[in-house]
Structures are given as structure tokens and as C-alpha cells.
Image (cartoon, rainbow, N blue to C red; front, side, top):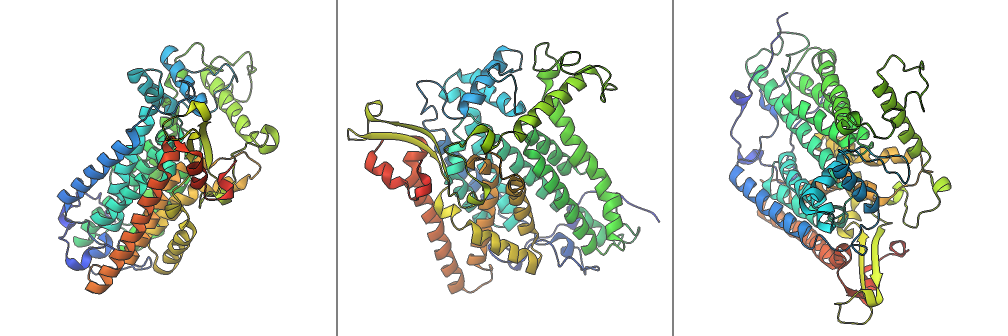
Length: 538
């Protein structure tokens, strides 16, 4: 049978109608996944995107500008006498060393570099521009935090088909305490969040693009030219997803969790696309047409990007274990068929893995602010990054001033997390809602693996990449509360009132916490009032 590569999808586009708008619970995307013969291409396309493109970009620009003001204001404060605070003390000096050592850091105090270089390279760019100071080592993180807000507005708008809900998602991310603090610290996790979220965005774009291409085939009645369905041609959005996932792994190894999760998710989306289009053998079609090319995009490409991120190591004469063969690696071993540089690299990566496997509470001791993953969804055990009091702090109008930076998620956003996730699971099971599949898979990839080794030393800031997906889930629930665009006026007004109160509560909660998120001087009494739960205290 003849096969075809799908071309431009623009001929399958259609104008939006009032019935297609999706501010709330209007079904968006997939038809039921076992549909085999759609009546027309719209069953493949799903609901169209919003038609208010100009307003969408204006909302995005305004919210991104607000995010920039909030994230960048007072960025250089606080410091520990002009030096980094908390875990900045690991990455900031290493980034500075990169600038002075040809892009390589050797961490002489520990004789081991335990994280890939990309995040520290990004910190180094800020230090190159602004110098070795609070602004210099935090400006890249702040920019990453602002870009996360930008991307979240766009992808939430695409998922909900609503500019209103896309804008709400941006506001919620701005007002999340964890994202705010991590955007103002010279640490790695905000860069992980940026690349994971960007990969999620391109993956969603790939899904829409593939469905638009398939709609062309359905409209032209070519879907049965092959029992496996059409070839999809070059999927540029999927290639971009692979690159971004590789960059996430080049910040922290935990990025591999999203590589695996997103690969499975995109295969399931490809399968439902072929089933909804009426392909006679959708399983084999997905394997032959989608999975095999996907191995290159979502498996090999991330590995190549990860290896490329070590460019300075490969070109260095002094990098850690660059010449391990003959010293730490005996010639003629199992990997002797590889070039000596690759043997040294594999040995180096193995030592890093050994370090992380041995980083347990029993071996490293109980850290005063460590926590376990069952406390993370509601942010029950935050972290104190910085604390100063007494004569070292002034400006609160009292003699007992306190300046503190606490990593804490905004409770009005975090405390409803369990009901939000359970509602999403119910929607996925009962309605096959692909949006909730995306949210739950992305969220689960960042938390479920940590349950596999509870003995490991863990911290709340590991949740940084998950916050955008918590926000999307919250916004999807808000969309349900708003109701369909065609609902009665009273229904819509009631929904808008409830959503407005919820958003207002989150914003007010963020403003209340703001002094202990930015290290502003407050009285000891106010500091005590900020600590709502016993688990928030040392």
C-alpha cells in the first residue's frame, strides 16, 4: 500500500465558534480513545485555540513584566557578609571557577563535582556580566524564573484554550513562594524547572501539530492508504523536546525522570491520534511510524546534548578524572575499546553516581531542614536559607529585627494540592482528559522516584520543577469552577466569583509571606506570626 508523509496542516484549520471556547470544563482535545472512525477532521483536531491572539500576547507580556519586577527587585540581598547563602556556597564558587579555569570546575575541597555543568555555566554568565556579587550569581536564576512564568502562560492558554486561565496561571506562578525564592538563589533547581517546563511546552505543541497533520489526511480521505496510517515527516517540536530534556539532564541528573515520562506520554498521544483518525492498525502504526523515530528524538538526542554540555571537560587538561586511565582506571578493562577520554568520563560519572547513592541520612547525618517526599505536595516542611537578627539587622522600627529567607510554598496554592491531584486523577479515569494525563505524568515524574529510596537525604527544593504543573492542575480545576462558556449567566458569575476569591487569597497569602521570602527586616513578633505550622520551625 502507498504511504504518505503529512504536509502542512493549515488547510485543516477552522474558525472557532462560541461552542468551542473552553474557559472551563468544555471538553478539549481527544475524543474517547477507542473511537475508530471520526466523522470529520475536527474529531482529530479537538477544540481550536483561542482566536484572541493579540490579547493573548498582551496578557503574556504584562504578566511577564510583572514577574520580572517581582523576581529582580532587591536581587542582591541577602548575602552572608558578601558571600553566598545556603547551597549557593557550592555552585556560585564553582561557576566563578569556570570563568577563570577554561569552563571547568574541579571542586578541590571534595575532589568531586557532583552535578553536571550546565546550571553552573548559566550562573557563570551572570557573574561574568555583573561580577562576583549577589546580583551576579543570581541574575541568571531570576531570568530563568521569569521565563518560566512566560512559558506557563502560553502553555496553560494552549491547554485550556482560554487566555483568561493562561493569565491566571502566570499570576499563580508569580505568587508561589518556592518558585520566587528559587528564582532568587544561585542554585540549580530553577534551571531544571525551566528546561522541564520548556520541554513540556514543545511536547504539547508537537501533539497539536501531529493532530493537525493527521486532520489533513482525514480530510483528504487518505487515512486508509496504509493500515499503519501516514508518516508524520520531521517533527520539529519533538526534536526540540529532546534537546530541552537533554539540557535538563545537563543541569541535574533528575532530568532523566522526565525523559522517560515524556517519552511514554508522547507515544500514548500518538496512539490515540491514530485511533481517533480511524487507522486500521494503530498500535503497529504507532510503533513503526512514531516510536522508532522517537527513539532518536527522545533518547539519543538528550544523550548527545548531555555529552555536549561537558565541552569544557572534554577539552581540558586538568579536569577531574580527565586522564583517569592508567591512574584510577586500569588499561585493558571492560571499556578498553573506548577512547581513553570516554573511559575517564564513564569512571567520573560512576563516582558521581556512587556519591548520590551514598548520600543518605544515616551516612551524612540528619540535616536540620531535610524532608521526605510525602511532605512535599503540601509543603509541610519548608527550608530556612538565611537568618539574621539582633544588631546585625535594622529597619523594622524596633530593636529586635529579624531578616530571614524561608523556602516555603504559598499555602493557599499548595495546601489544596491533594484534592486537586485527586480530582485530576478522577477526570483522567472517567473522561480520558489528556490534559490531566499530561499534568499528572509531569508531576509524578518529579516526585514518585524519590519514594524508591526513602533513606536518601532529600530536601523540599527538589519540588521546584513541579510547581508549574501544580499550577496548571489548579487552573484546570478553576476552569471547572468557571463552567462552560455557554453556561448561564448566573453560573458563570458564580464561578468567576469563586475563582476570583481563590486567586485573591493566593495573592494575599504571597504578600503576607513576602518579607520572609525576600529577607526584609521584620520584628521578632512578625517573624513568629509568619511561621504557621510547627513543622516550619527548626
